[in-house]
Structure formats: C-alpha cells, structure tokens
Image (cartoon, rainbow, N blue to C red; front, side, top):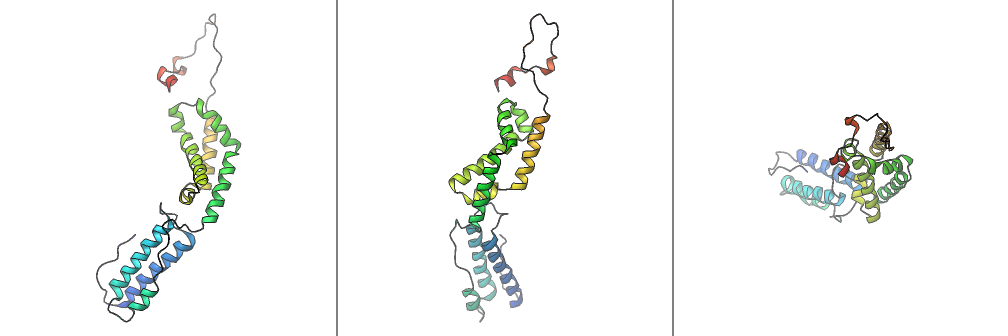
Length: 199
C-alpha cells in the first residue's frame, strides 16, 4: 500500500481526489477481493481504512469538512474476511473433483514414480501434482485464501496438458533383460547410473 504524504496540500481538491480513490479501492476490494495480494481481503481492507484515516488527518483536519469525511470511513472488518467466499469455495471444490477424476492427471500419477527426479523437475510433474494436492488440502481445511491462490483453472489446465504430453513423448524403456547368449549390448548412454537407481 502506498504511503500518504505527511504534508497538508494547498487545496482541498487534492485531498478529495485522494480520498475518493482510496474509498473506491476499499469498495472494490470489499466486493471483488484483492487477488493480487497474497493475503486476506480483511487485511487489505483494514490497511486501506488506515490510509483513509491518514488522508482525513493530513488533508482535512482543522477544516469544516473533517467530521463529514471521518464519518464516511468504513468500519474495520474481520482480518479473515474474504470477498466472494462462497464462489471461491465452489470453484475450488469443482476443480479438485475435475482434476482428481481427470484421465490425464491419473496417468501422470501412475507414471510419476517411474520418472527420475531430474525429469520430474524438468517436466514440472512435481509442481503440477503439488498445486493440485495443495488445492485439495485447502478445500479440506476450508482455507479460502489458499483456495483463491491455487484455483487458477486456465493455468492448471495448460500445465496439465503440457506435462501429460511431455510424459507421453518420453522414450519408452524396455524392461526385458537380454539373455547371456545374446551378443548385442545396449549403449552405455542408455544405462541407468547407480546414483539414478538409488534416487
């Protein structure tokens, strides 16, 4: 949040402009939330309220307008207040169901243990699974802020499709062991190192 200057302006017009902008911000966050902040809407609203009090003191104290502006300052809200709580919960529940029942996500979960750690990191497998699992945990805990942070459907859809496609494109490894009589041997480049085997 921006700091209000500690000086009194030459005109009330400047103060009125700052006041109306801050009040508009407060109303917007109260109705629609502040998704860009990784905190509750209640915390953001109470910060804006403090800024409105500061505007009132810096711009209107000692004027006839002071009492009128002070009365218009919104009350404090609960720190855990979240705008659109019901919609956020509904969206998160729908997304958890969508992804946990998705064939692509199930395929990724089946293939994940067979991927090397380096491949999981490179293909963003763990990142995708982690985000969906975190969303699931947030729904169970009724953590509205967490649900809002992780309920990015377009982003998750894109990531799911990309990760699924990359795993499908990985070369298949043969599980069959060659007989001792077979003269052919695989290239050493295709052999698993001891370090990879332990991981």
